Picture (cartoon, rainbow, N blue to C red):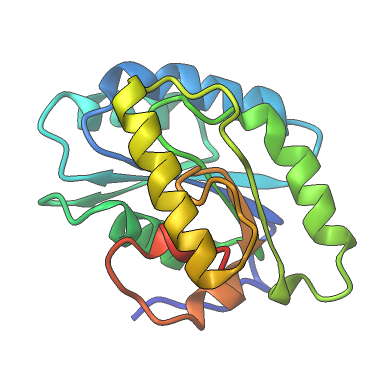
Length: 191
């Protein structure tokens, strides 16, 4: 059983990063996270290796030896991004969570501004601050599919979120843990 009481832990925010076969992105992203967060808040970095088949595990072990703020958790088989995010949030020891995709499409330098916006809120438990990939590093086909899916979802839910697939989100850990779980949940967090 995991202890969900974060009061005994000093971390204000946890950066949760789900990864699947992202070995080449591990070191650069952890370096960028550290550069963005050092001096901003007392933070931890939580990686969840979602059944990677490449040398992601070895890279995470190497980085964990170098970065004392890094915790690593592993799914033996791929369970999907929503499940990996949920694992990371459950294991995080901070009051607030920032999530990033492990492929480097989200800039960790955006976290401090999003985090400040969340903390300004009267009740941060009822707010999620999300990023928006203005310059996606995907194929035209993938960008088209994303625009179509976001358009349909936005019309159905009326939440005015332009890019729910963006992995960069900042929210309260407690509020997340109170939500029901389902596959692809990470895409519906803004709603």
